[in-house]
Image (tube, rainbow, N blue to C red; front, side, top):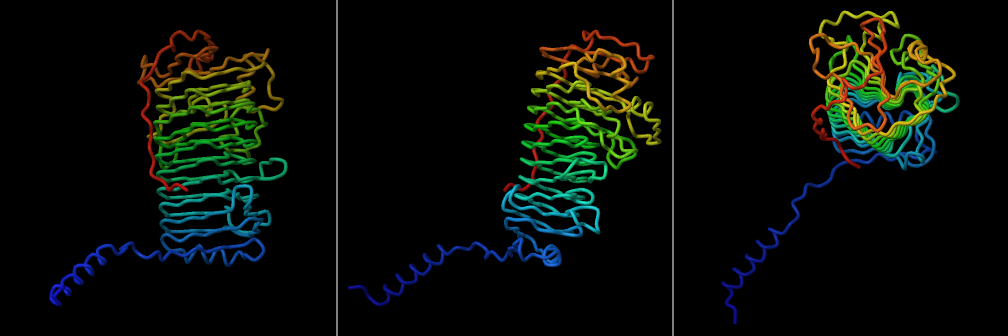
Length: 418
């Protein structure tokens, strides 16, 4: 028989055990704002983006949502904007009358967008500025109909951001770059498809980028790695471009006048402009019939375009470019419409048989003999050094450039995952 005193002790022990097993997980107080295409209004969606608190979510159902002005988000953390699928949820800005973007996100951290397409924005499709940790996953940005210089400049456009993740996205019709990452650090652009843009993918004035497993077809230029003067971040570095498929990027250049990508020749696979520490490898580059891979100094672009600059910190030369293990093929069919730079290059090869590698040869005089460009393990090494700084005395001897740089290290990022 248990004495009363011992029974109380036993009950106390059981109570303590039960208490110790209690779930102390904080209660989820986040809010999900759900919108349906048949009832959602611009005002309701914008209000949700203003009221948004950390951890909240905006969910668009399937269908087409019509908006007439930019949807904007500012100074949020742990933000999710989600649709029913890239081909299922369409945010349509065809009738946009105010704002320069479809969606604009500023000063926000750990942002996840997935499963929708922004269509026919007046300006950029989705622009993100001063964000850290931002993911575009299965997000589209398209301009329908015939492509035009009147289309928005950029489809997916993070600028002045850190830890950018663009994965499994689609962009068509941008009058500058379909996927553009500018003045940013720690970047992944992967598994995406870009077509009928001026530039398919452009990394500009940025550091630590990985561009891989993408498909770029029928753009003017497939992938651009650029450094330009006069921007907040100059002389970017450390770019790895690999495992991409670049095919038939011979679309006429439809960039507005005065835009730097307006100089990109139709028929460009990869163009490296005044960039530093770029490794290009394991790409399949097919029928980009003017410049399969081009390594060009800003001096040449400036000379052809009558450009000047006053940025004393800017270095207009390419440095430490390493190209290896790519598969390249082409025909002699030239694009029917061409830019000034394209016409300049084609003039040297009137039969259309341009080399796969075009190097302007204009090197930083402080790096003389430093293997600025190395080409390694290429089955096809058709090459020309334009000797742009010596009166364009063309030299097709690739031997001085058969060397290798140390492989660049992989760049990791910290951005949300779906």
